[in-house]
Image 1 (cartoon, one colour):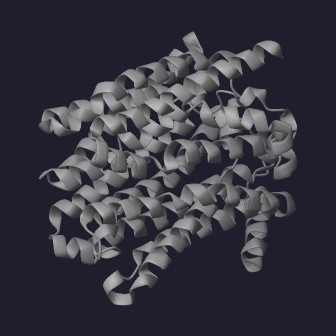
Image 2: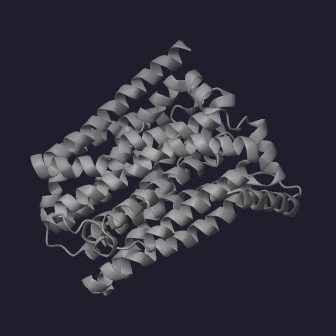
Image 3: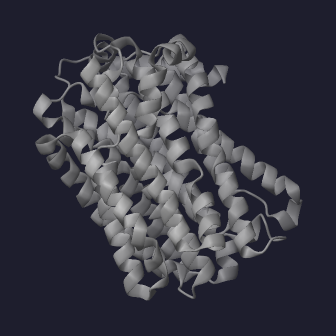
Amino acid sequence: MVEEALNSERMERDARRLNARDHKVAPGEIAIGVIIGRTSEFFDFFVFAIASVLVFPALIFPFADPLTGTLYSFALFALAFISRPIGSLIFMAIDRNHGRATKLTVALFMLGISTVGVAFLPSYNDVGWWAIALLALFRIGQGLALGGAWDGLASLLALNVPENRRGWYAMVPQLGAPIGMIVASALFAYFVGTLSAGDFLSWGWRYPFFVAFAINVVALFARLRIVSTPDYAHLFESRELQPAPVLPTVRKEGRNIIIGAFAPLASFALFHMVTVFPLSWIFLFTREVPSRFLLIEAVAGVFGVAAIIASGYLADRFGRRALLGAGAAAIAVFSGFAPQMLDAGNAGEIIYMIIGFILLGLSFGQSSGAVASNFAGTARYTSSALTSDLAWLFGAGFAPLAALWLATNFGLLAAGGYLLSGAVLTLVALVINEELVRKN
């Protein structure tokens, strides 16, 4: 760890020398760094999520029936969301003491090692319970690393764009989610569709994790190239985007952090209701080939990308809070009838996925930064990181586990009830936030 820190400090100095030239910091340049970073993180996320449905129940939990094995896999899946705030706590200290480049280097190497470790994971039949322990360890490592991967570029982007274009640029970081999902789904669809079941479970599923490691390396250098330049270092400092101690920040901004975490809950709950959960339902309870549904997800993800882009235009025209509120209301309506479409054959699945991704894009596109303006300048960097961690924990961490358990025991309508609860909490958070803004 010490050697990595020293190496990253040298890399930071080299990057500063290489980039010590006069050029203006453009929002477009920040946007590229944000998209690269978020795409790499979400690709890792979806590779693990897909494997939690198609691989881990048979490989790691062969002693359980397929449904129980999938529920066990989703329980391990949630570990990353639980450990992510702890990662922020640890890596904020590294940021304060050694710099943002050191933090990013250690975090992304940790993410890469944890991800490629899964690729070498032995089966339960080979090592017994050690396979479960190793998978849990790697998943926790991913969560800790994601807590440290917060680079502040999204906040920097939001603070360096014209006021009448804030909604447009707010959607940029969110593009990484559907792009990462599309690539991960297409990659798994290829291996599932071209390999026998035995070959896929033996070695084919491991290749996407190797790809994830390679993408992490590329993303690391792309992000270091941006955050290590003198212009950006000055911009982070002048915009007060510096790491603050976590506990004092929570005491000072705790109320806004909690409101910020609940404001996007509808979109974060829907996030897994149109990605991980439907894949598990189709795989467990229908005869459909997984590769076909993965391709449906990839195509629906394209609609999600278009909807995210549209959210930028709509937010600038009508306001981000208004769009989030309308999106939560639409998701509430969607929750009342849409999940049942997963049992309505191929046409129902396609309609569910496309409508779901359109609603997800419109709401998720503006889910970051809806209440970030409430944060004091010196606390903005740390508060934004914690808000993101808690939003994913509350809204998405247990969504696949809860939705599959509810749907199995009480029907698909119960899974819709889970989604409805997220929509209601979003509307409540937005109302409370509006009242606070009015009072202040």
